[in-house]
Image (cartoon, rainbow, N blue to C red; front, side):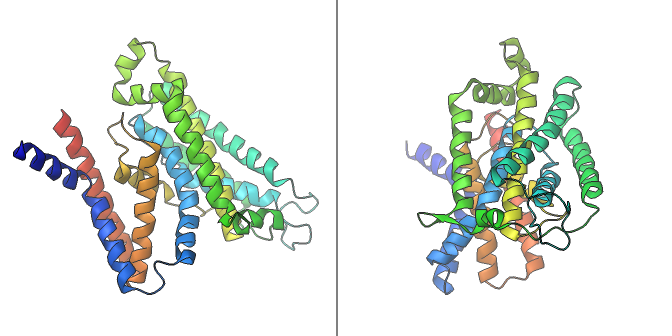
Length: 329
């Protein structure tokens, strides 16, 4: 009995080692640095987490089916640029569409998500019907989206947004920023889809064993298309959020965010081998990543060295995930 308990404790420490180390690092930073445990700093961390969480929740569905989505970063930039061109002030000197009145902010959100979802549908089609590996299909879409965005914007940075758009980042409801509320809403919707719908059950079944799922009557192809379509729509939403927060956008908006999102999901417990993962996994992973970055900044770690630290965390997290998969086999 003692040996069994020791083994459970050992497995817990190994499987959650990254989270534990990050927690210790944050506690240490909080007690050795001024202004770390303050409401303002906490709100800034939550603000930074908001768009990252939306991205991670989108990519989590792909990872649960043992896939990935390398197009996320470019899709975010595309979504941010589309929103930017439709929400510039009439008196802005470099207005993208000089004679067009800025559209309604809520309408622009729908347009951005719809356009990105259409491209996600194409990606899902190639994966589902032509058996193109997700890595290759999303890599191809990453290049396509980047090219389209470059042609659309002429590689020109965007700015001069209407107040209604920037207020999405600056406004608050009961003391909590709108961006955080958006992330909370997306997390609730994602939880409902993952846990309370057939689509969610199908998603986990495909990740566990796609052949067995198909034999059991799961509409594998339709489900895969919906997963990548839904993910792309969420990338578009994240691009809209980041554009509002930055007050501008360019084709480089969101570049590389897909790697952090995949890593965050893995750290939180979404398995790259498929079939396992929760909404809470994405929340935990994103929180760990953001707290790590803030802690390193407070500790005075060189900005370039921070990339090394993040890379090490990704290595360790993926290795532990593979270890759990091998142990189960």
